[in-house]
Image (cartoon, rainbow, N blue to C red):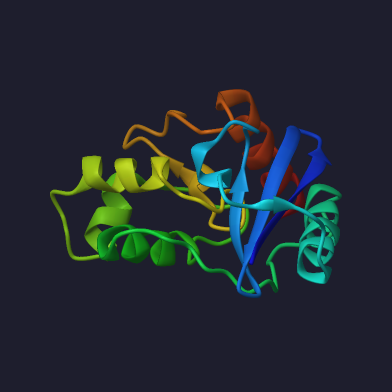
Amino acid sequence: MRYCCQYESPIGTLYLGEENGHLSLLVFAADDPRLQGYAPQTTPLLEEAKKELAEYFAGRRRTFELPLQARGTEFQKRVWTELQKINYGKTCSYKDIAERIDCPLGSRAVGLANNRNPISILIPCHRVLSKDGKLTGYAGGLDAKRYLLKLEQSHA
């Protein structure tokens, strides 16, 4: 079964999804099509996810201990795995990620994979900036991205 619940965060309502004992979604919109097929019901894993998110937003958690299951293409999964290696409070560019996954000309493809990240915050796509260091698109909006980066940098 797939279950989902809401979490009220400082950057707005987040929607968490669990599938087969793994966190499979953390999205910003109730109408996100990836939520289809999830039954609204809390579970011990979703409660743990809310607890860890509360600790993160309070500046007391830098890493998450939750089992993740992100659905995507093999390329997207490679990008998402690399995103998880970006340290708390640090940033890098799309080009950096492309080079790290041996796809040096793949900055745009990395950007598209970021855009399709199904588990925001835990797979920290907010830590990726343009090559010139500017904030670029984020599913939760640039204000949310700015908030997350400032939160992390103030507790790094």
